[in-house]
Image (cartoon, rainbow, N blue to C red):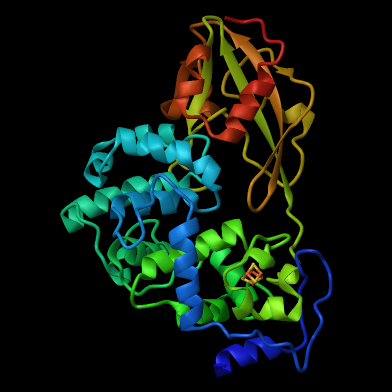
Length: 394
Ligand code: SF4
């Protein structure tokens, strides 16, 4: 057994919480796996992958290099998003823009509109910026090494390693959530995430083969998604069962350890749903930087730490009108905070003037029948749906 593996297995006092909130036994002389993770582990894993891999629209057959454009597009879409949610978006994007050059020729508004509903909208802006950079700086051809890939917008260490390994066969080691979990268990890493990330990356790299590194990465991802699942891993069905330290110690379900999360704060906002008599709704383009950057929104107050004061509600409204507060709140959970928003609604004539607060240059009127195609992010769709309840307009 390597010194690295032994150190990881023996471990020290456990800090942090297990996914199930249980304590992990601290073994001074833990059970060892029958065969410590190494080259044979990789052979078993690749054989399993050849037979059991997931068939996904961006995947190529084992031992085949994939199209870097499709690998990149899928990896960006899969960040913080499930495979099931990504598949229809991936298929739509490659149908609309089959190459990186075609995507670079599209407008940012079109890309954002097609991305609407997938969330984390900075990814869509970076997608377009990255396509532009590849066409402008690399002649429309993806660079094949991690160093150059990491200079591109939206491509961090994980995505660079995934593209290099899967599309170009470079010996690189992407570590996503699935791989993190499998490696934590294979080596019984007892340090809690996120502090254990560098150690997990190092251990994962010790397994990366020089032949088929892309298949190895995808095999680890598939094993994590299908067998070594967060709750109730199927150790009896696992091709790596005899290589796995966590399985040998009976602690597979308890790993990876995670540091206790801090509570997600609540922020409060007030949205103004302006309905014009001809059936149009007032929307506004958000600034390019920041949360939901470049997306359309229902004109809203800034989101603050305290609930809006009722008597100030119409002070920063985008039109002067008779406002009505729609009963109830809209709640939307972002990664770092929870948004609680009230909606005020007004019906206005077609020739209504916008106030200073509307920021007229960023505003546009969109007919209600076109709202679905307008590319509103999920939180704005919720606000519109909540605000339109019981509205008897065209
Ligand atoms: S499924 Fe079980 S045996 Fe396989 S890697 Fe995960 S914890 Fe180990």
